[in-house]
Image 1 (tube, rainbow, N blue to C red):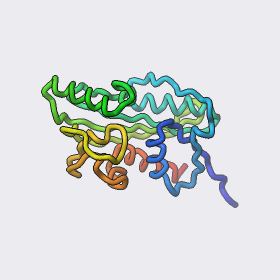
Image 2: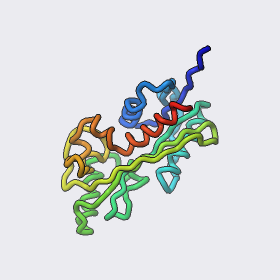
Image 3: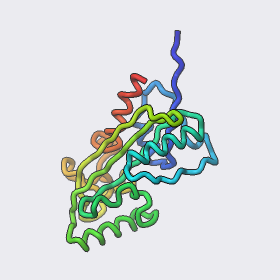
Image 4: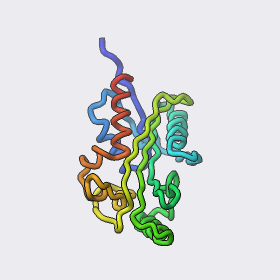
Length: 198
């Protein structure tokens, strides 16, 4: 007797995040679908005050819109000297260009005489079946803001996030090195452990 394979929607419109999550979940006994199979669904307004609230909000929204059990994540950068900014507004902070985002961050840090501020990446994941949250987890990585953007790997804020244990930014390391320590890597490993018993 064979067990029917479960299906889970990876509910993100960010292709970089999608690739990272898919790579981290390789080999799981789950049939993964993406939003490319559900054209026309508008993105929900992210009104949560925390990454966890936004992850739950998006997971529930996409599950209800598609009728699929859905996993969603919310992640971003918190800079201590900027009182946790950009935080949940990371993707919407100062426009869509990351060089422009970096410039704004450096300008604000200089204004506070806080170059090299400590910072962290946070990733929250949630699985929803309709209104019901079936699983959620959180990953984080501590570091500091690099004096200048460095590296061409990774995406988003990786070029300005210096990870002391590696002595490099997350954009200067390999994808494997990043996944071993990153916020999304941590959350995805917790998700893998859950899916093995799901």
